[in-house]
Amino acid sequence: QREQEEREAEAERLRQGEERIKREREREEQRKREAEMIKNKEMLEEMKKQADLSKASKLKIEGKKIQEIVAEDLTKLDPVKIMQAREAQMKRDRQEKIRQRKLESKRVDHLARA
Image (spheres, rainbow, N blue to C red):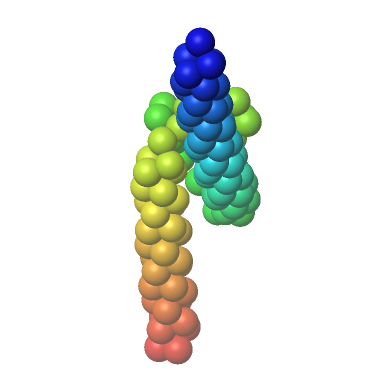
């Protein structure tokens, strides 16, 4: 009977150790999710500011406009899609700046020739 109690105690210790490891793993995953969510939120806030400045609020991520995205949506959004939208926005802004510079240089050239 004493041997059986020792075996049960050992099994209980093993089970508790496994549960502790499982809880630690879950905590770590939760921390990663929270860090990812914070990163995504910061990225979206930056994109919203840029969209306001460049008046490019038509930018959409998974069918939602940037201005319509709220905190609950951050958990559902794919970080890769957010990055792609950010890159698209940056590319569009760059092209807009290039277009503006070309127009400006044409104006200056026209004035210089006049």
